[in-house]
Length: 225
Image (cartoon, rainbow, N blue to C red; front, top):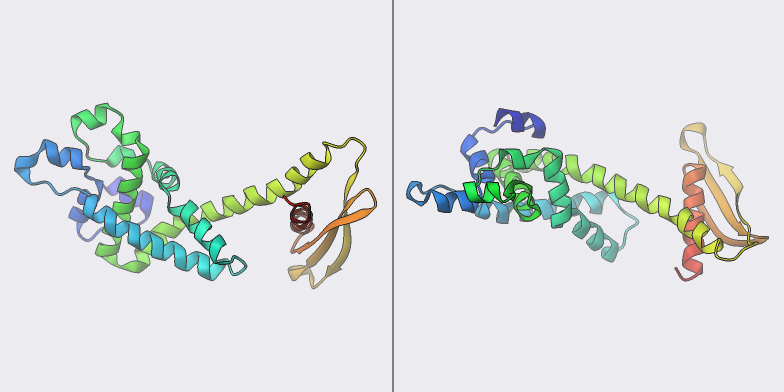
């Protein structure tokens, strides 16, 4: 328990909450006479806390996203696949309390069990310490995930445009810097992307690379992609 507390950066006042969050229903069923608490109720609460924390963060920090974009981004961050990846980052399966059968059948690595336990742990932190430590815990996983998604999207714009252009032999794609403004600590670059001699997209950003990606994105949109 101490080891897991160190990984998540939170020390419980009531360690029983942590025990409950890590206990699967299979273990409770195996020890019915002991009336063991398991994590399904905590999972319910954790799901709600996770949703509000993620919603608040992306609303405050993604001002350019419309409602539909916010909904899609939130869904990608709170889905079973993402929670499973978050759980693996702290090796959560190692600390789960499972029945012998569930443990032997690979329950400690099962995405549904790990994602549920991750939500239950959120609820345990929330009940024990309030919304602030729960938010810190959630965002320690969510913020890097958002940054990684942004990197993937940025990478795809230029790559996708290049792949499309390469389908027509002889076509030449070129990125041209057309404007640079602002002080050294807050530069703004504007780049055009040319297909042969024609401008097919224009974009701006805090770096030349970002401006090129935005130009490629506009080109893809104008081309119907």
